[in-house]
Image (cartoon, rainbow, N blue to C red):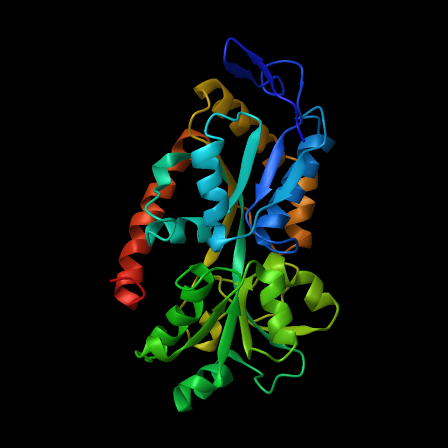
Length: 320
């Protein structure tokens, strides 16, 4: 448990203003093994390795409500904690856009930046009869209830939206018939699919790399404009006739109550990670694409995303 030094009622966050009296903490709003966990552990390790923080970053897994438990905890209990960073992604903005965090809004925290884009993927077990995205779509069109998707976000979340976008592109409109099981993280979703409890998994490249290398799964589509470097044998949805691009930015938010100087310090540290050789290697190893938006302009980008996803969710019928 980290120690805070309090003076005249104010928390002195020494790790940002001078001599690291307390270790920084990164909350991953999901179980170990998923995308948010990856973000905390990779960024946290590199922050320490490059000397941006003086002590190893503590990672705390806080699964629940598709990230809602962590979001509520930060807003309600740790609003001025300058030692705290929280993993975020397109899934975070999706849930906020759909009012899924019990009325909480994107302006109740500060989004400090994103430093990588995680390509969306559609995955099947290694022994699945589906050899292509077209095979999967055809099966759903023939018998919608025959295919269930597992994903690491809650119902209506970004993972859920990916197959709905593909099916909409394929001319399938009755999206309420599509089975989707939301789990706390991509690793749990893959386990369900490998175990045969679901027929497909919808998630992100970083969540599936280890399962792919172990031969447990096949990725039948990556949801990018072009094939992902290092994974050149995986076809895009676009080249299979489904014009869908869905990438998941990987980044951080911080409590809203911290000072501008503390926010800027975190933005600078995240930029240092983005510029490091270690992050460049982590992106290649995990199928991430470069995507850097850090500091003050990122909040306006997030606000735009929330608006866009809100409109798309209404169009797709997952939000009234």
